[in-house]
Length: 450
Image (cartoon, rainbow, N blue to C red; front, side, top):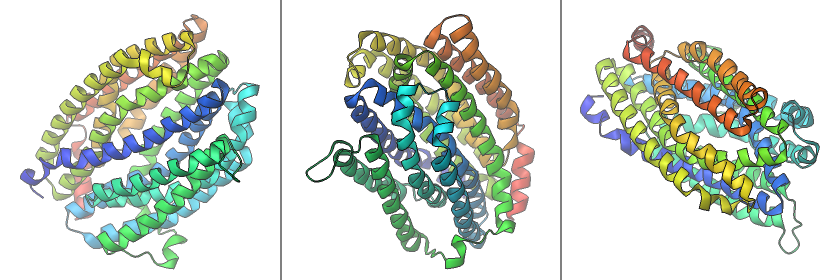
């Protein structure tokens, strides 16, 4: 793979990923809108349950992140057999991990919500919703790993079309299941979870068809149950540190959310609405980061390390410019867009302030998202978790309590802590890349796939 091929592909790989992320965001936004139509308490229950769901979904990143990097490196080195064997091994790992996560969420939903300090009126609505999400979580384990394999083969448009079909079905089903239609009763939040489970099953079937059609890869029966530890070793070498970094972030985020929940249902609803709009900004830099990971993985596998470095610089500049423009747009229009969710003037005013803090936060987050994915693609997966865990736990989680509760700054204090954490970690990741701390790991990855 040459530099001339890789460079123009950044945007062509990134835009389907951005479209895919926007589709997922749109479904979550629609769910929040439908929940808010019931009450602000329902919206808070929806958002809090989703925070718990996302925390468990990150466990699937152990497999999907590792598979993405190992498959791209093997393909870059011309080792298609190794790439296919790794893809098959991901299925068995997804089965057991998905079953374990679904069982924990279903049996411990109430306890998990109490751990994040859910108010009693929120807990009543959130517990059955979270329990119903367990089935969707189990299926998401497969979809996450299978989509990673498709992206590693640069089939991002096929993944986008699958996600489009899956989310369209979800939206089509969630309206009647949440609000009722004819003989179908209104299930409320549980209806959204039921629609999600059905759409995820459809997505799994479509992924199997795409594997056969695009990759000429047909899973055998034993692939779904057998753990191929020899093939999973390199996957876990990348995936475990990467997932640990994500889990540390999610634990810190859950601590901060529990701080917000302690401020009351109104504060929790405000945080939920601001998060939904903030995610629009995050999606742009995330799509650039994921596209960079795929392309840098190919370049590292091929031994083109200088080209990988140039691609990262281009990706970072594009991400910083885009996130700044989008964050300014979201913050400046927040007063109007927040009316889609609530008419409470106090909630709208506070959420608007939080989104202006996001404008200051985003450059640090963009460095994190783009560079961490590049480090992982190079095989340097341990540094992000070792360097970032302390900041996430002390600055984000501890700072949320210190500024939000101790100094009585409320939600504004919590979001100042978010910004401080993102900037501290972003600077650490930038120093790691630009001082070439990733090179030894990249050279070791190249030797392994050869």
